[in-house]
Image (tube, rainbow, N blue to C red; front, side):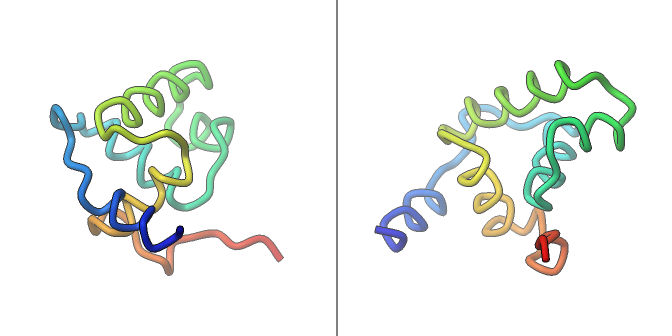
Amino acid sequence: MLHEFSHECAATAPTEPLSQREIEVLRLVARGMTNDQIAGKLFISEATVRTHVSSVLDKLGLKNRTQAALYALRHGLASIDDVDVAD
C-alpha cells in the first residue's frame, strides 16, 4: 500500500504552479510544523496558513498534509534532514 501511495505521490504534477508563499508553507509542512508554528515563523495568521495549505493540496491533487510532506521530499523541496522528529 505504501508503495502504491508513493508512486501516486511522485506522479502528481501541479495543475497550476505553486506561489512562492505556497512553496514556503509546503516546505514547513514537510518539516512537521503545525499551522500555528508556520504562522509564527512567517508572521501571518493561522487562517492564512490554512488557506495556503488547502491551496497546495488542491493544486497538487493531494488529500492531506502527510501526502504534501512526501511530495515535498520527493520533489526536492525539503530534505529528510529537515524533518523535526519528536523524541
